[in-house]
Amino acid sequence: MASLNSHAKDLSRFWKGKILWDSPMSKLSTLKVGGPAEAVISVQNSEDLKRLLLWLKQNYIDWWVVGRGSNILVPDKGIAGVILVLEGEFNSIDKLPVPVSSTHTNKVLVRAGGGCLLPKFVSYCTSQGLSGLEFGVGIPGSIGGAIVMNAGAWGFEIGSLVESVDLMDSTGIISAVPGKSLGFAYRKWSMPKNTVLLAATFALTPGNKENIKAACRKYQDLRYKNQPVGEPSAGSFFKNPPAESAGRLIEKAGLKGFSIGGAQVSPKHANFIINTGTASTADILELMHVIQQEVQKRFGIKLEPEVHILGRE
Image (tube, rainbow, N blue to C red):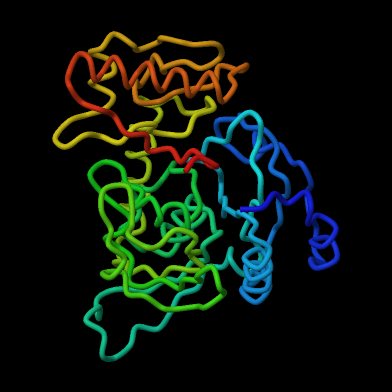
């Protein structure tokens, strides 16, 4: 794919909205690391997104959609291409009528834009007395990122609540896809690369508002008790192997609290790598490799990162 450098003037003429040039990805990442992206563009609606994706495709420019940046790692040297941030209509939340023919007569359908932050959506559902997403309290990502990763906690996964989604492919074609056709599995879905989630419709259960609030408080308390909330991290760094806990394996390997440069295995939860203030992406990647090597050596298990390393093929 081409670098944006030779197309910068063309992009400036083509795109009427704001473009942030050479923008540090540390500002868009919850790990607070990462060099500059060639360009960061906020997109407000589907029509503009289609136009931009077609332009990027025609000019062979790489692109990524980034939500809250809670599950990404960008090289220190930065990244060639365009980072897209979904705003405007992609932040919407709307209740939908349940079709008469629907099998969900006891459910409430709620549509959220792909750029809507998951905490905002959980708060909305709680205020409306809608149950199902309580486990998501404290997960910092966007709706789009949560669905692409099939985010989960405490034995629940977001994919189980998805009724349907609106997707856009790299040529700008929009399609509605049932949730059961998305191929949800542990921390992933099965849609092609460069598929943009525009919006998702969730089937939620009416419930007692106070009970829903109590469940949210319980999960939030568990997070504060067991995870390094408030310290820069990407959440759980490694996927849990089948019938195992990545955090337990890392701790048993004697790596809890171990650090390289400004990157540290959290003393509170071993499956969190935290930025103690001076970490670089290189520190985090080196620490990741040490963890993988030690766990492989001791237990014969290769830990897979849950975090997406942008720019790596």
